Length: 371
Ligand SMILES: Cc1cc2nc3c(=O)[nH]c(=O)nc-3n(C[C@H](O)[C@H](O)[C@H](O)COP(=O)(O)OP(=O)(O)OC[C@H]3O[C@@H](n4cnc5c(N)ncnc54)[C@H](O)[C@@H]3O)c2cc1C
Image (tube, rainbow, N blue to C red; front, side, top):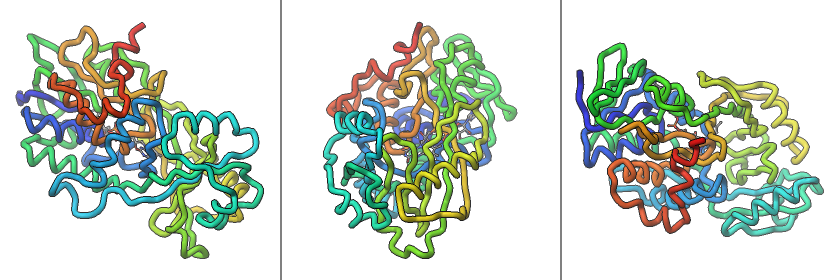
């Protein structure tokens, strides 16, 4: 039996970021079922940073993470983590209420004319949007660099990463969690459930009541843009109703119908019909007439009923800590969310900038999901 202070289950962005903080103070093991970290949601995101996107706690975590991405700790990464890219929110027919909701919670969002929008997104179809909002504070994240940075930080601080270690059993005995894998048993007084879409599955192994985590599939298509050499200068473009979006990536364009199909946890692949719908909506909103996809992928965004993340010790189960439900915002919020989770585990004060951005800890606690 291998003994640690804390065992983190899952080496996606959630497990990696919390482990990086915990390892400064405790002996940490990270158990990952796949051969390498980042196979599931973390490796499949759209890599966007949008501080006006998400429920209130995620806005607080994302806004508090901006400085980390712009000025990471020395040695964290050898290239920028965040590259600025503006976002355009189009208001199409029937989307005025959605526009009001966006404006009510957004900060530093400006309304611009359709003509001004076409200057930065030249393929916008005239007359499609009757209002357009511009968010100047968004950007592209280098997800791989961020994820590897947290894993390296964790390891340099003494954490041990065990890949191909699928957690099959969890038993709480004499104040210790015994975590069973095919390779042997690990023991610690604290386990962190950072298993992404499998969060409820892992909880059930230990007899812990699930929080009602629902994975939802999202599909993304990658479109060649050979006839638009300026594509990388375009903004991210979406409609306020979140029925489609497109975004430049590596000289191409990614497109999605922002599908959110409830599914069981699994190794997700793209839904071709959902991507076709995204292309159709993009073709309607623009002068593009996209016919060909180069590549596609799917991934899972996992939510509980109020769409807030679940961060905290499970009521009635000593040492079982939830870190799930990051939905579609888990990368952009990861620095501050990892730091906050570590503070809750260690019993230290919560980061002041997260509180300053309006986090109410009650809104992320597993207690709120009790019947
Ligand atoms: C298409 C798409 C687009 C997105 N776009 C964005 C975006 O633009 N910006 C943004 O911030 N977020 C985005 N997200 C959301 C973001 O990707 C997720 O919120 C984040 O990756 C969740 O991280 P995680 O570590 O919780 O999950 P995961 O990355 O899935 O990690 C969980 C890990 O736990 C492991 N695991 C599960 N069960 C076990 C077990 N029994 N034993 C051991 N290991 C186990 C899994 O193998 C996995 O590696 C997007 C997601 C998708 C799918």
